Length: 129
Image (cartoon, rainbow, N blue to C red):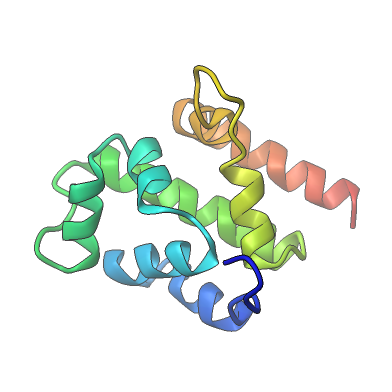
């Protein structure tokens, strides 16, 4: 997205609503700057599976996989709506790589301990508001 205007925040947020369909959520995350690879990584599926979900060829069959997608959606929405970050900044922060294992430490922490991590993100936002 280098050199491009950031996506309209309202468009991204609409796709990150809890009532948005899985394809809408994936499209919004992708528009914000999440690669299908990063989404697949944290959800624990292949990139092809994310493609299938986005194209409505399949839907998440596992509640756990759907929950991981929902956790990413919620974290992104929290950073954009409550944290005041532009969508690409939220995506960059959440997908920041450290070059080793785990590849995406923040997303890994959210996947492993979603409630605690989302609460910590909320606390940090509240402390800086």
